[in-house]
Length: 413
Image (cartoon, rainbow, N blue to C red):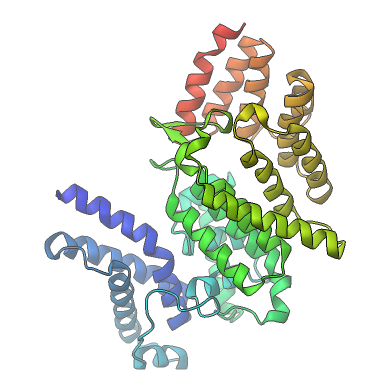
């Protein structure tokens, strides 16, 4: 293995283990700045030592131990002597690196800490992506369409708020879980989406993030087995992740209608369908209103139930989007509904809805316009819309797909 190969492997391991390391240190030392800084120092040490010594059998455990030792050294140097830090230094931490159960999971503790109601909603998601997902400040800023300096300030203020307000690093008691759940689910889903179609970077898909989001979804499911939105989110992620192997080919994004459905993970789809049926049963017998994640999961169940794209039940999908608009009447939901309507009533009807939406800063809006204009034979407008879509995304696989589609417009006049 060359030096470059070793460095690439170190970077991969660090990204996968970052959330575990930070969560473990945050639980032990009660200080997010120390946890984040020492995780970074552990990476520097790994870069220095592993090329010569070899990658250890348990690299995550090595990084956690090294970071903890660095934290203790830092605390001693700065002569910090509060009770929590004294205890952290004195106690031999024998906690296994892998989680021992849902409530005892350090990363779940960190999620609930980052999603505390004392923090602004945008700060909760940003902080979780930074500390749990290991995304850089620049990557998070791109996901939120804000300046990097703005995002850095947002994260810094959130960490300061946690420290100043003495927000505990723990999973809330069961009676408080539901109040905090919507924020947690939103964070988990955003982490999943960032992995499923990365907003930036060389890798179009980050399976470490999708796997992390699903893992957290399963833990939440164990904690709250009767909560429909937890089951709905888990089902949604499972059925979406089942298509991951078919989403990129030759460095190019492959859209749902072009994917090889024989390669979809049928076990994940079956598990997702089971969860959707459970949600439908609960709604029918309790007369409760399904939430957004349950409806999105039902939409995905319709898609994954079709053996080929042309057999998709678009009428059912539009009906589900109508329900979703009642629960979450957002422009993005309206955009997806318009795309579904175009499959039934034609691209002119879909385009009329799309162009009324205030989503000019959203790349998927430009993609939808480009595709609908293409189907209508409005070639020049379609190419312009593809140009806008290409300029609005940094995902390399999506860019490659859009460039190919733009190049095909002339043959559809």
